[in-house]
Length: 429
Image (cartoon, rainbow, N blue to C red; front, side, top):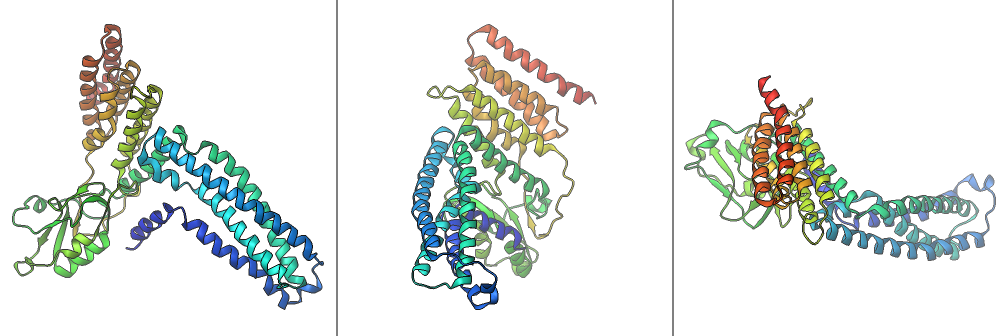
């Protein structure tokens, strides 16, 4: 029951740039003193003698160079973060910051610097004997080699970090991961809404105590509270919903008259609310971010329809992933918590409305949208097929109002007619 909570907290630590460098700094200090344990063993009889001056020289080179490289890596990462926010969308910043390769590189450089400073100070104060000096030399050579390999790999990664293609890939991966988790647990491991959940009159309402977005729902805490109070909790605000004190987060259904007056403070506390949306449990946020990237590319200042076309292909992949059958769907673990499923129509609105509006006057984008809707309409999922048909007609209306050249409009209509054929054949089946 603590797995999901632990995953949420772990992902929040990944978003903090200082966590890994701090951990590596503490580890490097411990490694610097590991060599001292060799002095109390018989290892000195078998180890060759290593000059103290050679170790000091190697550590001095590492100490001076690692500080420069660490400073350079920080400046390069900041430039990449700014590039991702300016070229794509500021909402992609958290994904770029959480890049493992960049964090590992910065942690390695800072850890090597701290190791060299601590080890150099210990060597100059005659802290190590013969065996300790040999082990310290081996550790120094190993760390130096690790730094070289990390730097070479990091140079290739930092050259791509913050670029449009890399940012789109990161958003797609985060959205696909959230979609897969939701496919396996469409009700967040709770149970679907019952008929009783629709009769909300007279039921205790649980409202937000502050303004923000729902980031995470502690289903285990809600289940525990419901069992103690002999009640059922009906979720009204999924992760990603904007919460205000006048909006309902959940409804409480008491199982008996004696439990109608119960304290629902713990129910509100199970909703993690903050000022920004997260990708983890909010698949719609990833679709919104991809739509924002396409919208910026279609703006007159950027005028990059190719990026918008790339985003349309990405959205088709994501919705195709959503429509695929799930082999290992998680059984409900929280039988007292009722959770609504994601609305496919809302997901289509998040993904395609802005692109269809801003790209209505760009013939290549309008044609690609019609083809994309045709592909999605051929899906075996009835909800996706209906949403695709609706947005295909809506996009066609927008193009008729935006396109002035009859030949361009004819191309869009031809694409729409061609895309309509798979749906007709699927309906006949």
